[in-house]
Amino acid sequence: MDERARAHPVTVDEARGMTGTQLEAVADLERRVVAHDGGRLKLEWNTLRHRPAGEVNDLLVWDGGRLVGFCGLYVFGREPEVAGAVDPDHRRQGVGSALLERALKHVGRHGATKVLLVTPATTGAGRRFALGKGATIDHSEHHLELVGPPVGPPSPRPSTAGLRVRAAEVGDLGSIVPILEDAFGDGASDAGQAGPSDLALVVERAGDVVGSLRVELAGTSAGIYGLAVRPDLRGQGIGRAVLYEVCLEARRRGAQSVTLEVETDNDHALGLYTSVGFERRTTEDYFALPVSGSSSVLR
Image (cartoon, rainbow, N blue to C red; front, side, top):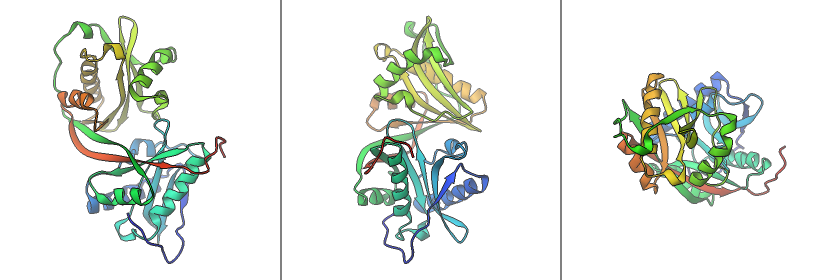
């Protein structure tokens, strides 16, 4: 997505909630970009379909009624994420730069000092664009997918006897927060934007909360996020037992595939997921960009 200046300014439209027409246009743009570049775009479709009305989270550039640029803003933790695409025929014309500039202004107004720009690791366009903006690599994540039933069931172990996965309740928060923050860092308990079809779950053993996760249901697919086990109980088969049961439940609810993300340097988690039958599909790079002029006051 290297770009040169356009002969005329780029007009960026702000979407306050996504209409059906806008979603169709984004899907069409995604198809064109993937056909040209390969890989996939991490556009978080379940989140896009449930954007709150009246709130700006998505930016669009049109040319003659056709969407040629898109940028989505996502809050999954302390640092907001930015992901999008530019039509292959409209690159090097300032579209990506205009979208990113507007996105940085929005997150700055909400007090963020850094954003994560998500790009496919399988293509060079996103990486060149990010580096050209002065971004530095923060981390990379594998996108994994399970198609069909999970491998198992796992062998019974004393540590997994009596495990129960149930819906999270308000009273569980005190137990969930330290588990998530130990696994994913400070602020991780705020990660994710729960949609109307999402399941916030806790793992319970003998009345004690020993783990947490969230399942996003979207038609024939499901996504698993934030699977974490209490630190003193890790390595005892609890995570694998929970993952197996959750994948079975997702299939019972109509999911033909289950997906999740894992950092590329997290060998333990990667081994856990592949042992249940998940396979790596693609990889995304997360580039850190500072937000200048940020304010702690919402405007």
